[in-house]
Length: 449
Image 1 (cartoon, rainbow, N blue to C red):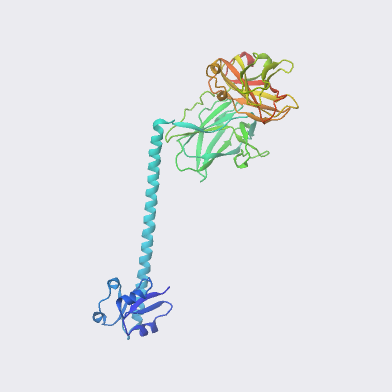
Image 2: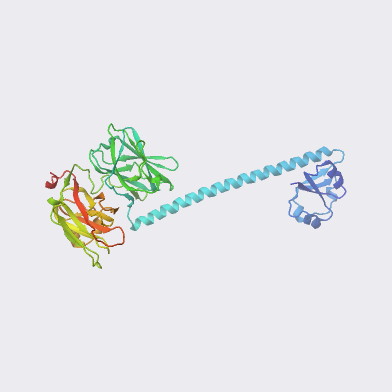
């Protein structure tokens, strides 16, 4: 691209002879508006006149009045070249200065926009807090009865499918008694920033262990993972949740075979500045656990059946099998109830389940617990069940688990549910509950002795 100069008539050939044609273009200044039209939108750099001829030139159009004037002296041609170079350097410096000013203005605008977004988020958080919960459970991976172990001086990592912003606490499921003082936990965001989590309860025991940051985590929305660094002298047992098809979200262990399940945990998010209670409500540490045979429990009764069911449905205790049999319907799940069981300070119940007939369809199982008589009052048995165990094949075995939604202090009702995993006849659908593992918080329940 060449610099364009208007040249006084009679000087064009002389100036073109001394200036490189590929750098400077000379346009004759025969008449004002015609010269401007010949530019085709290009910006002229200046006007070149003969020495002492500037005062004799006719008036230029208003568009050319502000252009710099250069004088051409045939006896000192180098001076014109130096003047043109100096003029072009000044224009280049001016352009660079304008570009720097534009970048500074853009940076200021960006900072103001970020400040405005933070202010709007603060207003949104304030308005949200006026009539909504101050904290909520954002992620819940319930335990399924399986255990992973971290060797001493090893690190385990669990990627979380949510952002790190506003996380107020993380609850870990410890299936066995462990001194949590040797556990160093942290949340690490996608930028590599680590936020330490400290155990809210440091005693020995099992159950939900709450981990909290020193300050509620703020900042921008970023992906995160939970890092557990075990400094103890014996292996640490951690409860596992369901299996995941995406291996990015499976628990990462430093040794042993690759894990296909997630870590059993709960993640709580709160409004800015909100901290959760240090104690996990209704999930204090476990002191005792024992296996209970169905023969030691009261006899089961049918509690809930599908309203349109016309096929065979039943619930009974099979003495020869020492098991509770729940026969579901094709139309939906069937729930049986074992009433009035003495379970003081119960914190967790597991059921050993089995599909009892070789020609049975695949079945789903769930176990639940509620304070005695509570489910008879409201009828909401579904919300008191633990996670369902899905698709158990004929002669298949599994464990179903439940952590009570309500605190169990004395007598309780045990809920047993089964359903068909596929849409087919319910012939031989023998859903057997063959035993129960009941954990208590230091209670002296006779069933556990």
